[in-house]
Amino acid sequence: MTRDVGAGAGAGRPGEGRPGTGRGPGSGPARGAGADGGAGADGGAGVESGAGPDPGAGPDAVAEVFAALADPTRRRILDALAAHGEATATVLAAELPVSRQAIVKHLGVLDRAGLVAGHREGREARYRVIPERLEVTARWMDRVAAAWDTRLSAIKRLAEGD
Picture 1: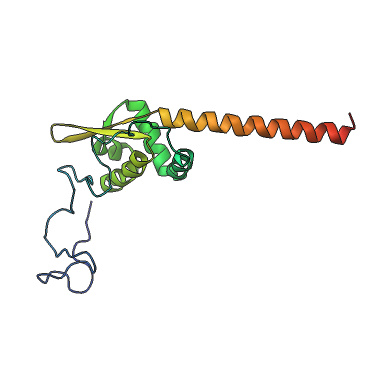
Picture 2: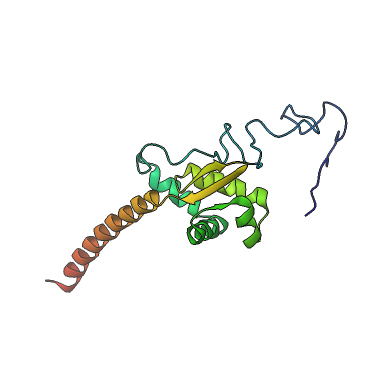
């Protein structure tokens, strides 16, 4: 894999890196980046983060799940994790047509949605599926479907004149 390093104006000059970042070339990993390249305290794929105390809490829980699952790559990552039980970003990248760095970013989105959790084993960050948010979302969808079934039955009765 090739990496485009130093592209753009000012690349390679001391103190001039990406505009607005305050980081120059060779300044090391971003704040919070771990040994595996995953993000940490600044909101990325935080290892040891889990889904919080109540993974189904809050009115936006279902919206977060839908937003995370809107991307087909994230759905494939979730499927691969479910098949493995637990895996590293490196293992997932080996079987998906996505770079390891992209996998880590997608895992961050899935983590924030409460769908996966990561933990450290030595230098590796291992991730696993957290099914509770999916169950909360499935229950919500069941309630919405039942409400629509009731409405459609009422419309049918009215249309048939019963």
